[in-house]
Image: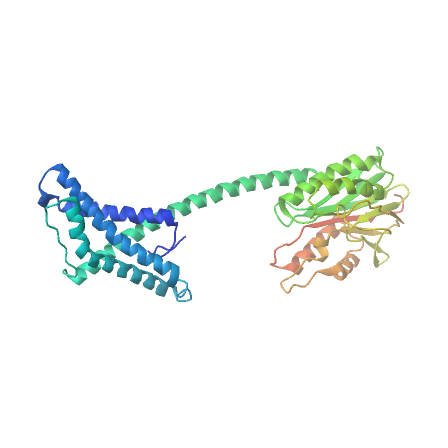
Length: 417
């Protein structure tokens, strides 16, 4: 809120109208107080009202000129003063303007009086009154004006606050709708697979986020499961809507593709023309074959999955380009197929995990993630997901989550898959 002092800029045109209203009110008040002594007809009283208004506007013009001069030339010089010093300087200039206006009434009163009522005598003498009375008059005028400006400013701020509140509620509703849409395209439960234990979670950093994961059966016998993990650059509503669009493209393309790498290759160009030029989508697909006991990977800019086997953890990289989807055109992605063994644990994750940051700006890092994966060997997939979540939460402490976090854990639980 603008501070309520005569020299402070609230809204130039509106503030001028406020002070004009104060001058008018004081002129009418002086006229009303002198009505018993006036005499004459209505026409003469109307002219006397015009005189009183003229005197009031004349004095206020002096005040406003001094105040404008203070704002234009002096305020920048005293900008480093304490607030009370700036206020005192502004009121001092207004008082100088008031005194100058009162002094100039010595010649203005006779001049204006002769103009409205020729033949009558008008006079004014300043300083001819008690100085304290003059000062008190100025203080009274200032308080009235400051109150009027403050009240107007308060009304403006209340209206602005209400407008902001309405806009926030509208945006909150849109974000809630976007969140519902985003949750609808992600799985509500983990799949049940023969000989395997799968669990996943997505934790947006904001109300809605750019991370996305999904499970998709590629056959009626539930032998082939496609696991999708994507990270749209950015956060919020725009990223969430891009994630929803990617989900639709995947569901159309994946069932007819020969491999997960072909899926990424097919949707790259269409996606590039649909999203903002500054956006991209880091994505990886993993097709798990429970009959052949294999997992086929394709990676477009995502973190390489981590495989825990017999106590050792290694990243599973893929050959060929790893550009995120939408970053460049005409990319042919390459698949990689891994044979699975009993006891294997495969972790798919987005960079919101390893790039989680604590108060010392230290990253959680892949080494901590590998150690944690080794310490959770043999536990159910859901327990591993929860252990990673809890470890990241403890590491970051009170720091806000700055990026979306998505995890999927796949465990081979026995030899007869």
